[in-house]
Length: 235
Image (cartoon, rainbow, N blue to C red; front, side):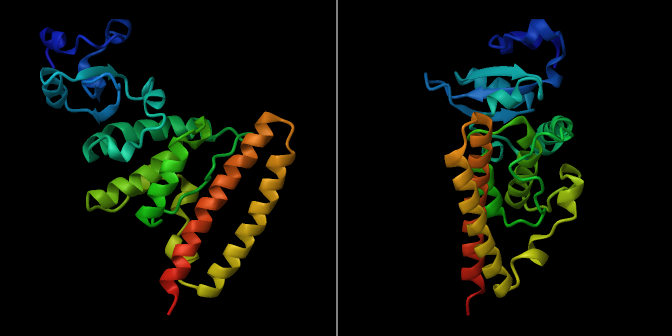
């Protein structure tokens, strides 16, 4: 975009600070009322310009430096198109997530996501995570978003956006085809839930309490997935 066109983006408070071309920015498009509701993340300059001309507020941010704060509580799969996700946001988020994921003292809520996880399950996990995610969850959010975006856009999930451990996992070969195995998994899941609920209730340390609650949330989500899978395999 030409330098003379910067007046279109008068709502970009970080522009002078970073001194970069607009092509390097993600455009954040907000509803034009006082709700400050984020309605679109876009890499398309024309879309951002059209949004401004229609009265919406547009803020430009570098993809990684601010995006994680902006997306807190916002489902990435619901606010951007596949091109913006696949070519700009997804790879940038994965790069940052991989750095946080190397910290052996912190554990993501899901330390692996099979690329063939059914999209409805991926969407449920994603909505659970984005409500209050930690830095170590970023790569998991990328993987879950990629599954949802892929099914929405009629393509296969890109393995390049998944961790090595995730690529080695398979939902279809693991749980979904064996009714007895599903029942055993459900029983084990319930036992783990009891363990972590007890740990949460007995915790005196806030960090330990939060870890236990995150594990409870994860196990409850997986239990719902198992129940649905059992129903599907029932004669």
